[in-house]
Image (cartoon, rainbow, N blue to C red; front, side, top):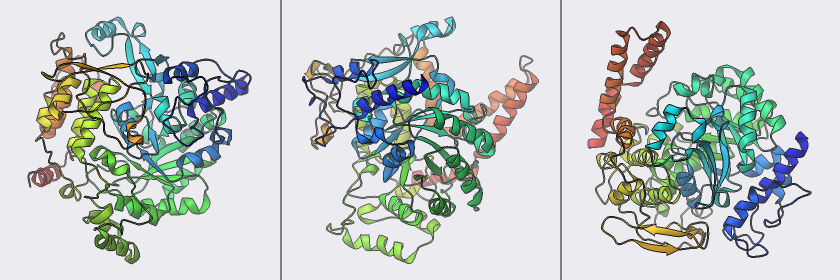
Length: 587
């Protein structure tokens, strides 16, 4: 029965992930009978098997007739991936990255148990598959609070996937500490994903405290059990994202990665920092290169590198030196998503007026500039910081906000990501002077922190994009400020496939009520203080912990945990570093 269900689900996902035989991934209406995108989505929810195949979707491609390892090799070879980022790697950013050249996108890390109570729902108005935690499954206290939040009338959306844009390109990442929990979570979602990834590198408290993330780096037996359990039971590529285990010695990382591969991992992504390294410290490329080189000498699985790839020159250099199979972008993608645009690699830009500058990069390859020096120097030319391949950052932020409107993202989450896109507080200190923080409209973090709705973000950034909806009968309401509302009817097509730019004022968001029992105001305050004055924010949290010690309501264990968190944050708060960063930003 288990084998039969896998065979059925493999066929179902194959149908969802097939590409047009004519090579046009965006032509979804070329099926027999003129099926619409909504028809295809409805069909994806129907039970299907080899005996009861889909009547609407084309036959499964070769990709889904391969073994797990063959499928992983096809998926990850020469890949450029949007990394899993909590709160950021949701549908709007994933779709934006794909539209600008990313070959794969990861979901944000999702704790295994969080997906258990969800229901898989077809959202016909958005053309998405949603995993919704129904309202009735929350406590009465939470239900009452949700009634005041216009974004969660029927439940909380944990995962939203656009199968017609993300098919063949979506990897679901989970945070897990036990094999049986990992399997239960994977069984819930693998039909809508092209791979399952286990987070073994996140050092954040919410992850490590549950035995997940980087906690697995010190427990290889448990890490291997998770991979083995998934590999034996899930008919999709199973990968792991880890980080360096030692700052200079590549051997511990290599041994850990090999143990995962022996347990069934079909791909490994390695972040170039150790646990405890903060983002302002440059990624340890020298150790990372040695890890990848030695892994590729003995293992055949794809190896992905991650860490401080802020320019195409960075990407090309790390690829060349390490021999990796792909790269993964996190903060650099937030800085400018169009970094995924590869350009003409064959000509290396020599046909452009920047050819002279390319000689500097080429000579760097030949003369083997030490990697730390390469990381800290200014990159010029076709693949540099001001590459002609890059689109204006303001355009990327505007398009991101438009995608948030298109996929009805939560306003608080959208605002958080925009703030991350607008600042460089977590970029390596050496690179900060090279990263432009000026915007033509003069927008500031303070302007964004005043926003409470998507419509507020639209107005601040003067967004004027049309994002097509999934059905020919779909109508998008348009309006901003005093602009008169209009309606636009459009088919589900990818405007980037033809290079055409389609602009107008985006849709008016219904979540525009600022006075909603104080709920909307309260949920924004935390992020606002976090971005506006990080030093003061840390101080306030420390004072809150100190005050809690005088309360008899706290148990001894609670006080001990609070003290540990406080000490961790003090280690992070490097006063000299913060002062230096402020001076750089002012300059």
